[in-house]
Amino acid sequence: MKPRLFIWVEIPVTDMERAKAFYAQILELELQVMNMGDEQCAIFPVKEEHNGGMLIKGPRHTPTPDGVTVYLDGSPDLADILSRVPEVGGKVIMQKTYLGDHAGYVGMFLDSEGNRIGLQHM
View 1 (tube, rainbow, N blue to C red):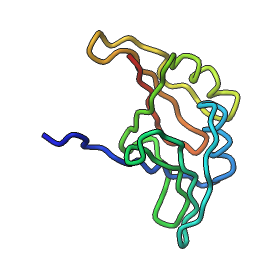
View 2: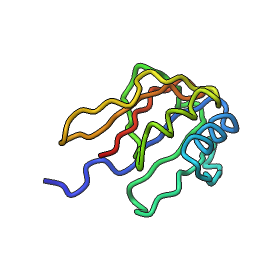
View 3: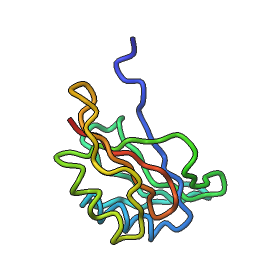
View 4: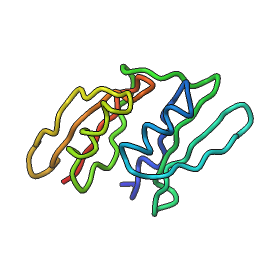
């Protein structure tokens, strides 16, 4: 068994400034912006260097609510994060829900770009 199966997430965006402001507001963090060729990126700050992700804008990246669902760390209480989603252009599509001792709590929203994003915490 691999110690870590998922190591990186890229969330596609069409408007980097709007998306960056959205995630900065709901997660209460600062994202570092950089360009890589024809792509613009905003990197999420994480403690573990090889277990993170970024927002990405470029010709090969299209936001969608129908693709893979990424779950972000919603601790300490994902209800607080969900409460900030509507005020910055997103839509809550699943309120904080308890799934049992094994999975803890989950919630879900559409971000400012139209991506379906999950939150989870124990």
